[in-house]
Every structure is written in structure tokens, then in C-alpha cells.
Image (tube, rainbow, N blue to C red):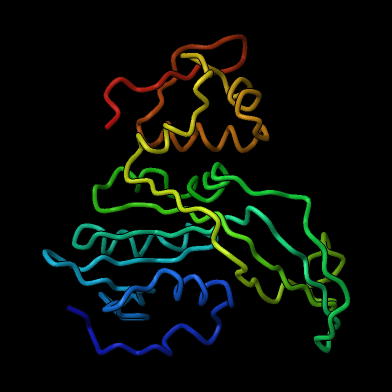
Length: 239
């Protein structure tokens, strides 16, 4: 079944707290953690009563990094990609020595549509019957350290860890039709990105990434123009 016996230390040295906590939250009796298959380390391997095991990958960001693993394993194994989105976030600030300086709740609230900020890197992969995607809306703590090594946007503060507080909701996507269901019910057909942003109460860039992904999945098609804006229609043969 696997290339080698279970080794729980593989890949854990640089693992963030949230990743480890989500792995524990998702794990079930009989699962194997940090197992190598086809030269790749799998977060969770779940034996099935029939057929190959389910491979579960927790990906907090940078979906581009998944491409080689998906391309190598997807034809032979069912793969579930789990993506946490912070519905609520607390900012924890510490000194360079680790002393707590401040704790506050971020005004930003994540939504399931934020998925498309990452999915834009692999939208066509979701058309593969072996791939499913699970979004977890979570409460998390973002730990920042005043070490002068971080982004200029954070004035030199480094993000040193992300810690899971709780999982609020789980949403599964089995195919492009599940993603298409995120469009607002009041959205006309055809529609523009501007209408999606307005009716969905979404930032314009998020709406653009959403329709880009849906187009590359075959769930939306371009159906002419209204002025300079593309008109988008739901595909008739979406599965």
C-alpha cells in the first residue's frame, strides 16, 4: 500500500501549529500519517474498504505546490485537498524574545469564496473525478514576532506561527457544479464580474478569480460583451 512504514516525524519539523492541529482534527482511527507514496509525503492516508486508499492533503496556501503531487498520484488514488480559511483571526504580537505584547481580533473575516484566491492556480484539476476539495472555515491565531525580518507591509514583524482555535464549518466540493453553486441565486444569466461582486458582496478581484476558475472548469462560458465587460453564462452541460 505504501512505500515504507509510517514515520510520524517526516515533514513535521517545519510544520506550523495549525497544520498539525488540523491533521489531528481530521484523523480517524486506522489512518496513517506522514506516509510516503510515489516519492511524495502524504499528510493522511485513509484505507478504504474497496480500492486504493484516500490521500488527504492539508494545504493552507500556495496551491501551485500541489501540482506535481496531483499530477503524479491523481490517476491512481482519490485525493482530498483540505484548505482552511480564517473566518475569524486573532493577531498575537510578541517581542523578539517571545514575550506577549498585544492580542487583538482582526477586522477581516474570511469567506468560502476566498478559496478561489488559491484555486486559481489549479482550477482544471477539479474536473478530475479523483479530486475533491474541502474548505474549513476556522478561527485562528496569527503569531507575529517583532524581529525586523518580516514584510515591510507589517513594518518588519514576522509571522512565526498560525494556531487553530476551532473549526466552524466544513464545505466539500466534489466537482465544478459544487463550485458553481456558490454563485448568488439572484445573479442573472448572463452576468458580468461587476454584477457578481455586487450581488455576492465580494471584492472585485475575488469575483474575477472566481469566474476565471469556473471558466477553466467548464462551468462558465463567455457569452458576448456588455460594453467592455465579458458576459458570462452557466454551462448547459456542467456535471
